[in-house]
Image 1: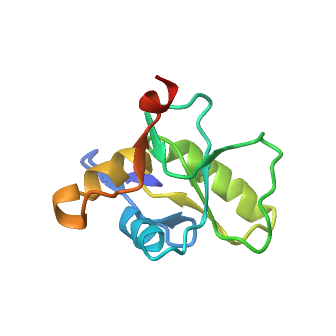
Image 2: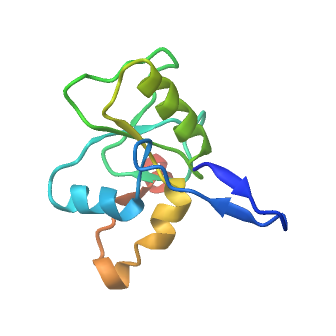
Length: 127
């Protein structure tokens, strides 16, 4: 989620459709059973994740060529860096989740989209 600043110092967040996927576009794909490979790029797991996600195996990991991949973290910053690196290495089907899990959770109100948002608590699994 590249951020630039206006002359008055206010941030302008820009969505890059070649590098990122919006929370609702990802949600729609999950709902339509067209789920991409979801990869959690955080160093340590957080208290929530996307259903079915795998942790990033290591920094040298290369995704399968025939699969769409969405990388995510809490705020999108780390995921964008990984997605940009993988795209530069020729992995064109990799995107970062715009705004990370924070924007995903904020954007998808269960009262609007239904109970299943594909966001799961990882603390319940550990308990």
